[in-house]
Image 1 (cartoon, each protein chain N blue to C red):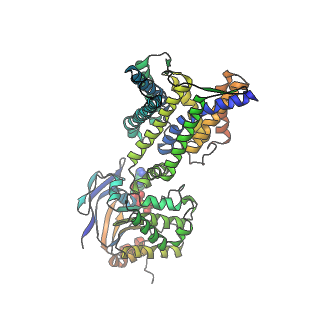
Image 2: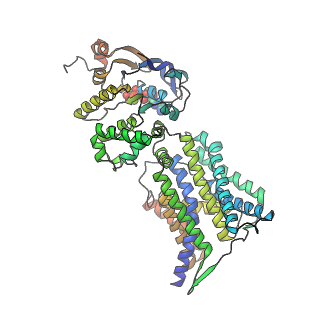
Image 3: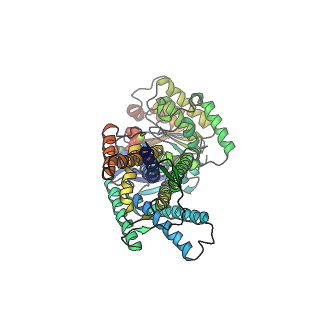
Length: 242
Length: 303
Ligand SMILES: Nc1ncnc2c1ncn2[C@@H]1O[C@H](COP(=O)(O)OP(=O)(O)OP(=O)(O)O)[C@@H](O)[C@H]1O
Ligand SMILES: [Mg+2]
């Protein structure tokens, strides 16, 4: 498979605090890759580096064979490398429709944007019912749907998802995961960050484990699910039948 | 009753000028949470630029050949563009580097920028009042004891028209949406593919260009200006922006007209000296009883 995204030896800092210590990882076209790790491990920081929101002190981000380390975030979005950030970051004072339109900000063809809007509404009928409601008045689950829908409006090649299931009811978590799988089946490559490591690894092809800014394990999702260390640290002990 | 109507008319024209200036304060605050203290001076620059442009056209002997309306249009457009450029330069040179600095740093920088602009204007045209070329015939209509002048109509119509255009721009265009998105969440806006540096520069351009319009119409309305003119006008316009709910465009318009009205009614019914006091008294009252302003939403703790 062709490599879509590659991080090489990334060091990243917040002031003098080093959050990432020379991490390297790879995402191939068509994959779902899970990045798991406990709170403060550096998962969000990794995505901020990829999207250009945080300049790494050292290392490179290679996307579609090109070095994008120094590109500004808007130009990275222009290459259809899209992030749905932690905490959803819905534009609270804008309507559902305006939020979705902003997702399509870099696209030029109005007919294609209209098509994407229909696709998003097919995926999340709830959003269509709330089309003129302000983003800030949606429920948590609806906001998460809007965040994913907004990211899809940009017609992503690679979609970075930062904890899409955070704070959702178990039923909604199932829905979100099956939608992520669905999005991947339609040809979108996905880098998925999750606290919910079991679910993430169940839909992922491969996974990386991040601990205090270092990649400590990398393997196929199946192997990680079976690994004693991963089970002990991230899956709450023994594997339940599912 | 006649006095009341007369003062309402005065208040509306004053308010139109304050509103035009207040829009720049509120837009800039909305997008980068900065009180741009130099904004009042950009407004004064608008008068200076207008005077210079009309003077230039006049000196070259063309004023009498060129239709008056065209001269005014050139002066207005020139003032808007030049003020817009000054605003963009301020942002680029003074404020951009401080975007993530503690809030006090850009605030002090803005006060410094204000001094610099005032001193440049003083060096340019001296410390005394400068007459605005009286090229515009001021027609006055009398309705009983009430006078209405064409200049007053000009100020109010211009202010209302531009506010309507601005509202349409902000709510219905792609760039307007980008501005609102950047104001609400800068990182999220970048993740939508919005170039926030360009968007913030555009905000400064539009806000400053509107101050340029304010400088142009106030020059016509008052008939003169001086380098320090923007200090008090700027303070009142800022009050208007806070009164309406800082960051809120419709609020700035409303606030501008309310301030103009309070000022002129106080001047008419109490005394001139109390007009400014009344304005700032109103500000204090609003800050006590409705800190988010008349139309403002309750924002998380800022400033
Ligand atoms: N803006 C910041 N300033 C200073 N330190 C930060 C900042 N953001 C994150 N950090 C630190 O960097 C480290 C990595 O944070 P990061 O947000 O990437 O973790 P995470 O893996 O996403 O955690 P979580 O699962 O809680 O979201 C943490 O120690 C955190 O405290
Ligand atoms: Mg995180």
